[in-house]
Image (cartoon, rainbow, N blue to C red; front, side):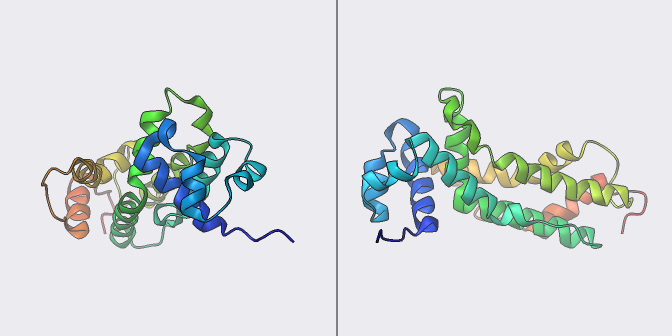
Length: 188
């Protein structure tokens, strides 16, 4: 009877190796070694390295904190949760997402792994829900999302360069500043 594979561990390892090395240098041999799986087993389950990386990124990012956002009646709590979920996801998977964005133009076979787009749409829908309730000013929800998470994104990018930067930021202050400029007519 074939041995069970811990798919979560395999996918976490695949995402890590991809983030560390990029698409070309990420080998199935390295992924298999770190996962404790025979490389042949990887090819039996996934026809190619691209299929494995696509499956791993899709699986992992779909289960990230940023993918599990839901709007409530509390705009401040929702936006703070959004900022924290984005920051936690960037902390855990930002290297892989950044690597994917860099590698995609050269390797279109990775296009199935763009599962970060649904996460962004979900967060924008949260903003849209609060716009409908009059708690956030009208405007393109995706653009407002970028405005809200841009500081977190910038801190994450700087941190990846190894450049000393802001050690931390206050999600509550970030949301307060955002709402000061984008509060709706029912600004609660």
